[in-house]
Image 1 (cartoon, rainbow, N blue to C red):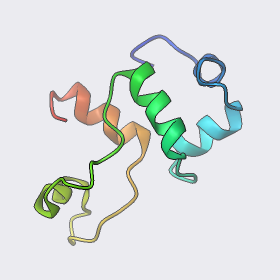
Image 2: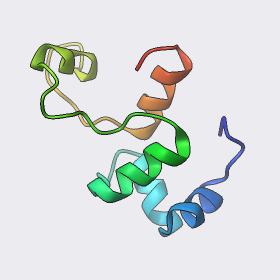
Image 3: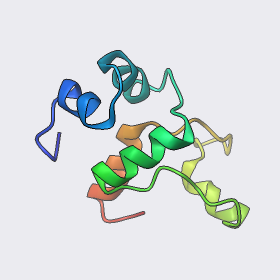
Image 4: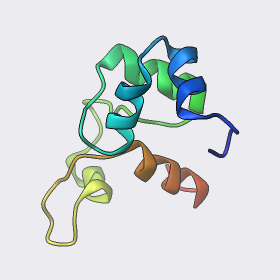
Length: 85
């Protein structure tokens, strides 16, 4: 939304179906690494966590109880808007 793209436009730019984009945003589908890289490049966000990132850094993706949850595209965009990575 911050880039002024509809889900349909985003889907076309990354070569995917709009239903795939909707499912990713809803947290119902995890994109492949290649799709995640396309989304990172287009949206200028970080979606993939390098394997060498220390485990304590994963805490930013944890729920309140400490359990790791899936990270939705909306979560990443919110962090970016707040000025965090």
